[in-house]
Length: 529
Image (tube, rainbow, N blue to C red; front, side):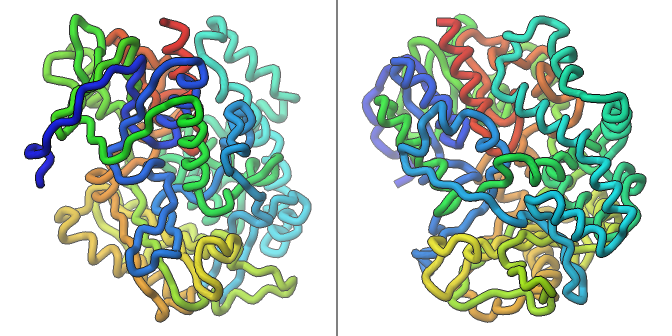
C-alpha cells in the first residue's frame, strides 16, 4: 500500500517534535525529555541512528553488523556528553583503538599512527627522521586546536560574551611558536600544509587522505583538518563502541525512552507546519498530523530544514539565498562506501610487520601523494582514477561481536565525485569496479563474500537527505564555524521562524558523531519556553 493510501494515524500533540533520529535528534530528545517535556522523535528510515547506525543490513548475513557511515567515536568520548546522559547505564561500552589509522603501500609497507605518541614517532622515523621531528613539532599546535574544540564544543555560543571566544582560545595557546604554527595551519589548505610540513610521500598521503574525511582538502584555511593527528594521541583517544556505532544510537534511544520520549521509525516528515511565523507541528507522508506546543527541532541538514520541509514563501529571500550558497562537498569530492560481509577471514596479504602488530586492527589508507592530487583534479571534473586511493578497515578484527566466529565485516571507502559525469545510474557500477580494483591489490579473502551494501554519494542524497553527499551537511570551512554555522545570521540554533530550531550537523559545533548540536539546540529550546 502506498503512503498516500494509508489511513492516517490519530493526531497527537507533544511539547516538542524532533525531526530526524540520528545521534543529534536522539541527544536532543534525551535533553528535552529529561527536563520533563513531552517529545517525539520522527525518523524516516526503518532504524534510528541515520548514517551512524551500524546494523545487520543484509538479509543473507543476519549476524554481520555493517557500518554504512561512521565507524569511530573521536569527538563524543572526549567531552562530557556520555556521562551527562548516563549512556553507559543504557548499554554503551567503548574501547580505545591502539593504532587507529595508517598508510599501506603497494608492497605491503605500513606507517601506523599509534595512540602512544612516542611509538608513532618511531614509526614515522622509519620513513623519514625529518618527518618524525616535524610530526613532533606539529603536535602542540594541533593539540591546541583539539583542546579548543573540546572547550567550545559543549558550550552555547550565547554563553560566551562577544569577543570572549577569541580570548578563550588565545589563553589555550602556550607560546608564540605555537601561535606561529597555528597561523600556518589556519592560512593554508591541507594539501599545501602537508607539502610544506612533511617530506615523505607516506606522511603526506596519510595526513591528506585522513583530512579529506573532515573537509575539502583544497579549501583555504582547511589546514586544521589534520587535527586528527593530535586526537589520536589525546586522551581518551579514538574509541570504538562494542557492537558498532549502532550501540551509541541504541543507548541514546533507550535514554530518551526512559524519560518518556516517543521514538518512531518509518515516520517520514514531509512538511513542517508554520502558522503566523511559528512552527506548530509537522505532517507525515501517511497524512498524520503531529502538533508541537513549544517547538520543532530539525536534526537534519539546513538545506532541507529551510527548503523541502517548508512550504514555498515561508522563509524570506535572504534566507533562501543563504541556503542556496551553503557549501556542501564544495570541491565535488564525496565518499563511495562498500560494506562487505565475508564467510571467511580477510587479511592484508603483503602487510607483515617485523613487530608482529596485526594491521587488520588498523584503518589503512592507500595511494601516493600524487595520486591524491590526481584524484582531486579528476573529481572536480566528475571523474576518477581507474584505481583510486582507498580506505580499508576490517572492523571485526577489533570487535568479534560484529560477525560470527571466523567471519568478517569489512568497511571500504573512497573519495569520488559527488556529481559524476553522466549521473549516478551510469557512474555507480563503474566507480564500484574502480574502488574494488584498488582494494583487491591489498586485501585477500574477498572470494568469501556473502553480500555487500554499496552506498554512493547519490544514495546518500536519496536515502539520507545528505546534501551533495556531504556527511557534515555544510563543509567545515573556517567561515562556516561557531556562530557562522551554517551561515551568517542562521547560527545559534534558533532561526527566523519562531519555535523552529536547527539541531543537525550543520549547526555548532558541526559534523562528526558528538551529539552536541542536538543537545545544545534542545537547551536553547528549553531556555526559550
